[in-house]
Image 1 (cartoon, rainbow, N blue to C red):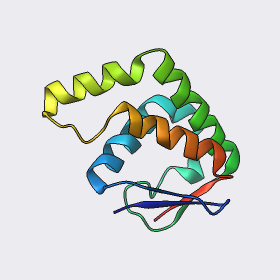
Image 2: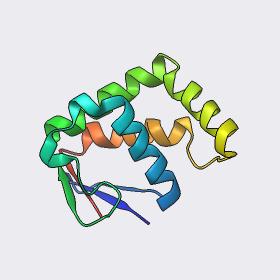
Image 3: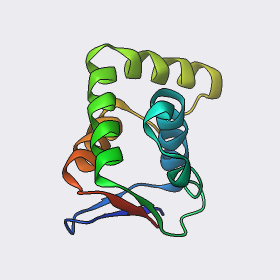
Length: 108
């Protein structure tokens, strides 16, 4: 199970299947926010470090996408295609808050 460790000492725990879906969504919708040296390792859990600046930007973008209904539409589409309920709006909202408050995070 992936654990994201925030610089501030707070952690975000998520099961592997949900994390892969969430990480894919982040790369799809926040691609322009993630620096080249922060791209690799999101699916391998080897301690990828995401800076505070990038974490805040991702959190802000995810919150905006929730408000715009993009997350809900994505999840509905995902559920129709895969019959998969491993990602929901609450997971995205919780991760957005974690990212903004984390001070940067490591993916383990």
